[in-house]
Image (tube, one colour):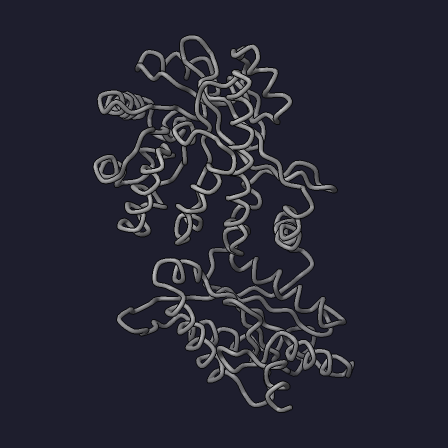
Length: 447
């Protein structure tokens, strides 16, 4: 009986109270309207990078050490819990001073932050870690446990938005954008099961003929209340939560199924590219998962192109190299996205089996002085052509940019000058004509 009670109320990894027990204690405290207390929501910064690069054993040990450090920061009347993953919560009773939060509470929060900010020795690793902390106070910020914890979570996200490794007290003036981000986080879990996710496709076009020579599959969220949501507004949450693994495989399968139909109909002769997240690439089953999708959909592997970024390669060169070589054994193509944006891109051309360079759109949008940008752009295109790689310029928005790319002998372009991402019905009309009419760029949401 005692063992059952322990499992129901305490976290198995750290021995701390779990979410259920934490909510019980918070509700009990809030049942007395004369009590005042703070709920402190703590989320470790970049914890997934520890798990992905060093393994879950190291991640678990980091969680244990964080729990022990937090215990040393608190007094006997405080409550500490691990809510799950890398999330912890505290209940800190305090005395109200006039209309302001007690200065002792502010000092406690800062002590917690500084304690967690010190290095950790785990096996052969020395880790530097930090935490983002959100605080909500009873009774001002919520009259029930659910609301108070949600507001502390909201304040924690504000701390992350402000650069991480800091604390933030909840207030009603938190930005609409932040509150929307939290709403998205809560609802993303059901988006795929409720068939709210869609795959749209942006054409890649021949510079000379304007014919469609390939497509990039792009995820969209068709929210029942908020309409079409761009991935720039939810991909971070998907990666943080791990949902990107299932979502990414779903996008890949949808693209391969649709690509097979279009190839069978004879209206698509080029490749379909799909973006791969660093979180996806770190999964030990990624190659087998992709092979299984290709087998199920019968889509020709040589017409599937996986787009990766430099940040994905930097994270673990050896693992990335092994995975990409295994994918090449499947005959899948590899594209290096945002080429020229980082410092090590040239090395990757010799270390990895790259088929396509996608030039970072910064070279077209005058991030650099025009003369410098033109020199770099021309040399990247020349280098790619001499290495017999496909070179694609993305983010093409004006006729002047297109003319410049044509002068530099870039063969393939992608951008709003030709088309934004289209749904299947819209795209099929374009594929039947196999040519796009140029349009002047009008600002729309980022792809």
